[in-house]
Length: 92
Image: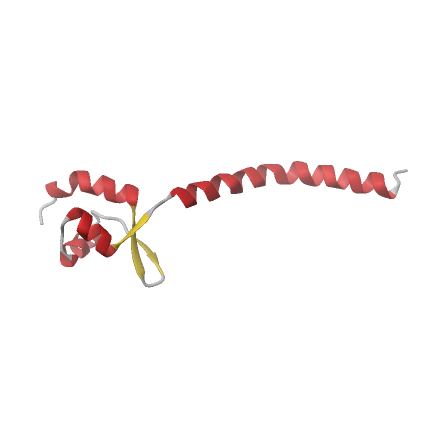
């Protein structure tokens, strides 16, 4: 029969083993999200040298993917880079 301290130690070990993979996944996802940079609509317009109506046309036509955060319209920096290489080919 186990005494109280042995039982607590066994529970601690089992819990740590079960939680370790979850901690790794959480740490990996938190570093991925903190490294992502988002730009506002005006910053994207300035970077691409386009007007707001052109920005909205790119979004509406599916050329530029946006992320909504409440009322804010944000564009991932990687998305901006992808579009900036090809957007001039798009027929305005």
